[in-house]
Image (tube, rainbow, N blue to C red):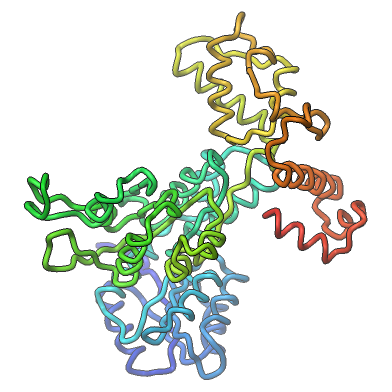
Length: 448
């Protein structure tokens, strides 16, 4: 006999019919339910009981579901909350996701969708497991990386679409994989696709699949990327490279949660979480009318910025040691060591290609070095991207003044923050800035 305690679900809704429907459905799933008619009753129950999931209506007699989400985020951030909203209230649902909700349902509640959401929420791993796995995969102890790990931890427990921004080579796909692997969809497929690498004439077929005979060369039925990612995560890398015609079709697939293959007559329901990334400024692409604004808002529910390697120079030594250990293991050779001058050269390099460039530099130096010691000259770093005490080694080789000035500004602000133990007021005073100006610069540089 199975004597393990049943998982507990809190239902918050002022409509008796809705509460009864949810109670019956969840009861059949062998779950124990507790019901509250308003915000006050819900908060009282949360104080007395431990729950595994909370389902709450958006509109309550004495408050809103958003207030309940915020209340739970402060007291028990590991408790998933799903919002129930009126049909068509997309903006409300997005606000709930931004506030920390796990997912949302629309009225009238579809029971298959309800059961799917509940099962998914109850599969969430523990917070301890999340943090340990993320630290093991995402190296670096600098403040920007600590903040990134914290955000990944939170987003892994949500179903919200995430737009991952950052420079080329900064690790956006790794971040996407971590969000997937630490979430409830971890046992399902993670399907990455480089949107810029698919020929435009094949794009619809690649995304949605095709039926045999639908075009020349279609010799058999083929499922698309959406079907391949069913139940899991579809990662759209370089999403800014999608042509406008494909953006329209992608938007419809996301909205309808269904796709129609090329040559097909019926739509296929798909359940995927969308993560996307690009090194371009997606908001600027919208302003230039190269990217649809409505698609932008569907993809950019939550933005997660991956810091460049220039913003976390303190992590370079740990990253370099990790890469050299991996190279030694892969080649079966003794591990190479970095000469102090070589390490200093790495720390003074701007790394326009970020972590990917660091890996390539070390792989080349690992091959060229003698006596298993990597000297500064073995690195063959581009002089135009080398710095000395924060200044360019050769000012005549600055190829982008704004980029250079921004990197200097970021370095000075990070130094002031580190010297004041990240006290923003004290750092602003040290730099002779007003607090308001400091806050603006932090936001502009992605350090807030």
